[in-house]
Length: 540
Ligand code: FAD
Ligand code: NAP
Image (tube, rainbow, N blue to C red; front, side, top):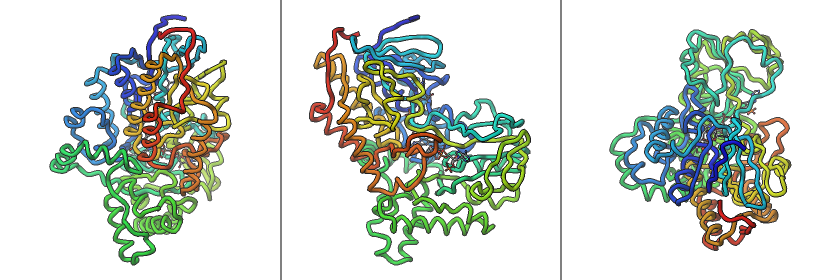
């Protein structure tokens, strides 16, 4: 092994989660080293630089809460900050907390192997570097591996090709070009209005229509921001207790069918005008009760009909195969209205499927759309993609990708049986992906370092979980989802967006408050579910 170093903790990934994980390790007096495949911190916000990228949880909530000085000194310019601003914030935080010194950038981890006799991991990177650590934190992101659909002829396209999830760092000129966008999830829907501003012709290839709500990202009035700052601590507590990781917008107190149609409309109009993903909880039980959900869905259907002038295009844009919110609601800045522009066209792939990609463009059943630029907004191999792309070997050399062949099994979304001293962040079985991943990861990381401290206090060298306890949590995740409408959509939540991937509803749908309660209960009871073991070797 070349360049072998020993650390207490190795963190993989320098997005929101990895940055806090590395910071906390150092705060706790542990030696820590981080690896990041990118050239800088930022994670999602480093890679997803496509025009129009911004967050969908308000920035005052979608930001680190662990350091009050940071949240007091930083001023967000808009309710939903754009990608450059979020990346700027993360760079600022990395500089402020000295995190750059803790990381090796441009270093992709390819393998991690556990040694049962010493209770340590050997982590190897693509450049051949190896380090050893007692604990490994996988902060590799649940939306960090782009999905590259195998469309026949894709490699033969003669024009420029971009993925929203790997947008170039150099400026991309779309001016006067014929542009095609494949995909109408959050990324596609955010980028389409921006692309339309530049392109001579824009064709949007939609396989499944999606719900989108205006982002309504306006500058934050200074007095509103001052109020947030004055009450930040209390706001953060409410955010952690909230269902979706935001303190804002409690649902209307009454069932929509118990109130008059005028009142229903008024509530929904207000939520539409306010904008953002919280439209998914306009009424109580909206993600549980199909009738309630239908009221909200139909309101959006009507909005689409009002906005889009061509009735056939409007019909194509109206989702008909899933309840609103069962996929994460998209947020946009003028998405539906863009289809009123002469140079923008929607191709409904359900009616007019892609046959192949040709050098000149995309051939669908009805003919060739000639393109200069093709943008893939085709999503991610979510939750498991980044983890199973590494060769992770636990006890007895078992491969994590084999252990998860039938779908991921975790305890609390954090620990995998047979992979001691290894922690996942924002992964399968956690609530982050359905809420606010920054605050969820912070809660997880605080829990991880409590476990690390408990391991050391017990003079143990390894901490693991029994298979049946992880299965119990995974069953609970499944039962919780089955009691909601979330399972009624094909999406990255279930893995059904990736061909051949085993389908299982992966995030915990009980809400961030309930999830944090589960973490707290385990910690307060002294981690009764975890198994602390000693091996022959002392601490590294
Ligand atoms: P990431 O930010 O994905 O960071 C993971 C890092 O790990 C990456 O930098 C990656 O390069 C690195 N990595 C992966 N594998 C390896 C390896 N083998 N070796 C070395 N490095 C590796 N969530 C919300 O809650 N609210 C939002 O508004 C929101 N908006 C989003 C907008 C976009 C465009 C996208 C794509 C996602 C959005 N999300 C949002 C989800 C977002 O992914 C999370 O909020 C959050 O940024 C995740 O942070 P993370 O640190 O867990 O992972
Ligand atoms: P996504 O929601 O999975 O959407 C991918 C899109 O690509 C879908 O429309 C999908 O169609 C389409 N697609 C995939 N393969 C295709 C193929 N072979 N042919 C045609 N179409 C194909 O991915 P995403 O838009 O990147 O969003 C993922 C998640 O990231 C979001 O849910 C959200 O959590 C986060 N995100 C948030 C924001 C934000 O607003 N802050 C922005 C971007 C991303 P089907 O639906 O038919 O599969």
